[in-house]
Amino acid sequence: MAKTKGDGPSGLVVIDKPEGITSHDVVSKLRWIAGTRRVGHAGTLDPAATGVLILGLNKATKLLTYLVGQDKTYQATIQLGISTETDDAQGRQTGTCPEAVEALTEQRILEAVASLTGDIMQVPSAVSAIKVNGVRSYTRVRSGEQVELAARPVRVNEFTVHSIQRTMTSWCVLVSQQELAEAGIDVAGTHGELSDPTTAITSVPVINCEVTVSCSSGTYIRALARDLGQMLGTGGHLIRLRRTQVGETTLADAAALPELLERRQTAGQPLTDMPLLSLEEAARRLFKVRELSAQQATDVSFGRRISPNGDGTVTPRQAHASTGDGGEKQHATTEGVYAAFAPDGTLVALLENLKQRGSVVAAPTLVFEAGTDFSGALEKSS
Image (cartoon, rainbow, N blue to C red; front, side, top):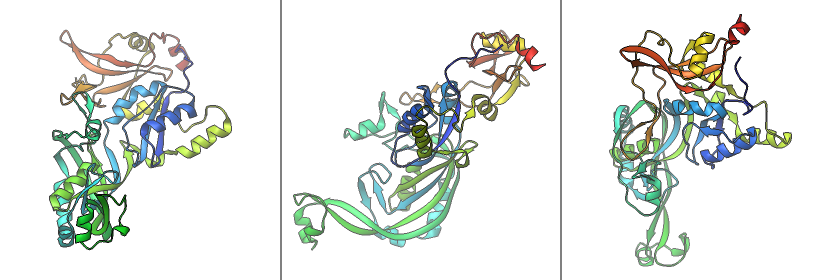
């Protein structure tokens, strides 16, 4: 019979991340809500971004690496006409080109968007979490270092423009008091200290594009905004980002974090009735399924290899393979992975085919019920 362990419920929780907090903040809050330290998330969202954030509790944290690598869908607003240091609205403005904005046509925008669809090479934003010689790129940028990251292949499945709106917005630039006076600008109307230099605020024309992007893991929407602006000669950056889907998980599956926090506060203890996708349900959604006999389940639980999955095809293992460009890891894929269940419905392990002494066998790559004797499971299922 499968053993029961007192580490609390295991499963996935989908949160609609609010604006203004980090993904790690959500993890910390869920630890308090669920009453467990074993919480992780599947793919960071920037503090200014909102939307689908998948978190794993207890044993389900082992599934997160497979979720990180799934395709994602975003709704976003790209502003053409201003470039920033971080390629989004949180960074310092670095350039504008009003003339190019005025001359830009909708047809030209759509043509440029089309050229950024499909398999493309993308240079990630310098303020990304990519490691350069063991140090996060954004840490190097914030310390004043110039960082140039290598282009990498990504796939943009969809890049749809829903609306194109021309408007005016504020443009901030550091200038001297003398430059302000020569331009006929009253320093009383500027922001910042009245010292040299100061920040002048003026209005410039911009174009806001509401878009939907569906893409492979590792695609930076900020970088798409930057590259679109560069192609059009206007500069561009991201001003709004909402993740609406990760794999098959959508906003319809998401819970509101404030509601969970309020319920936890009212209960005075960890919640036992959270909207949780169980470990077994999550595995059945993610992987092909293999139903084991009691003996097979026991063998797999003890790390033994069994007869091959499916037709015996061997898929190259992708889990945690180094990319070799700064120490970051390539997350696991679900290809060739089977979720193996005992006769009583317990998720025992994930299995992958491999060659052993000229034969193909199925080997456990992740074991959820280690050292368990399932000999009683057959009687329970009969």
